[in-house]
Image: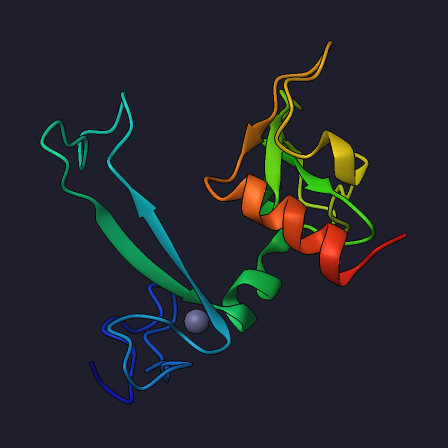
Length: 141
Ligand SMILES: [Zn+2]
């Protein structure tokens, strides 16, 4: 825990402040990247659960945005305008970074929360039943 993130920017070396002082590595105006490795790398490909970690500041990401890609892995479940209920996996292609997130989501009714749906596999959060009952009480339609 420190006022500064554990790691500086990998690209420019700038010391990054932590967003929360009680964090080890939660860079403000930067992003932490983690990987267990990648088949093909001769530098890092861990098979023992150890991750390689690096930070890159937002300015360095912006300066080389043409080198970035993005890939949507899931749609958040949205109910009554809110998210945090679960997710639906998607297989979108890796594309060049556009700066415009794919913000499609999966909309359900309150009564569908936690239910097994016909054509879609939803990964519900663990306390979905409590959340459904909370919505019915606190945000009735
Ligand atoms: Zn940087």
